Each structure stands twice: as C-alpha cells, then as structure tokens.
Image (cartoon, rainbow, N blue to C red; front, side, top):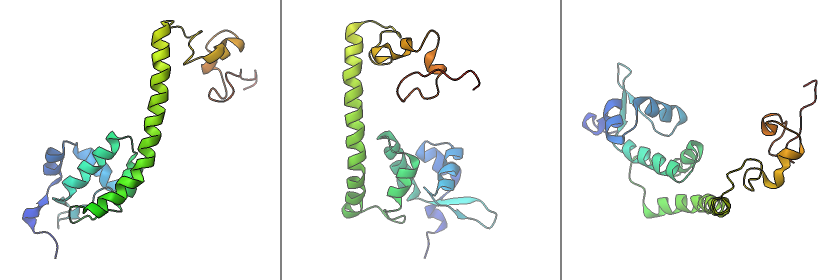
Length: 163
C-alpha cells in the first residue's frame, strides 16, 4: 500500500522545502536520484521521504561527490523509510576513501599555496605553483599553455605549423 495523497508533495512543495529549483528536481529525477508518482493528469507527486533523499544528495555534493556517486550510494539506501545505522554505515564506509583522497589533495594544495603566498612573487613566469621551473618559458614566447597539445603532460609543446 503506497502513501496516501496527504503524504505526497507536489514538485513546487518539494522545491520550497528542499531549497532547490524545480528544474534541479526534474534533473535529479532524470538521473534516478529521486522518483515521483504521476497523477492521472501526469503531475509529479513525491513521497515525503524524498526530502531526505534530496538532503542526502546535497550533503554528498558538499563533500565533493559527483551526482553519479550520490546515486550509487542512494541505491544502497531504502527509499521508503529512514536509513538504519547499518544502512548508513555501509554508505559512510564507501565514502571514506574518497574523502581521504580529497583531504590529501587539499593538504598538498594548501602547502603549495602557503609557499606561493610566502614568496610573494605573483609572477606567471616564476611561479613554482603554476609554472614550475619555468617550463613554459623554455618553449618560447607567448601564451605557451594556450598553444600546446598537452599542457598537463611534459610541459608546453608547440603545435606543428600544419595543425
């Protein structure tokens, strides 16, 4: 037996309660993050538990997860009730490695920024963060990173004349 009509929210009510635009909710539905029932007239009606799912997606985004990662996690949680401690524990464990990787990346960035702010160079040609060892200067004058095939690889590499 499904929820009665008083337990269902219109898309406008869900938008107001969740703080998201109706277009975002439609997109979430398209991605399979949330699910709506349809009235005889084709209007969307969402179970109240959808508010929890939307909050979950927003929390996932805040910790840097993609919508696909959020959907994968939601697939492991019940749609019709609040997750139990066991339900949530499994999801939390799956996020731990991802969050640890993000923390390590941010720590590396923080260390580089501290060094950059400390030197005060504010120079694209000498910046150890953006242009380590002035690799761009060795490739010639001009906007080398805009004129390269693979700026993330071994450094600036000029395009051939026939490219």
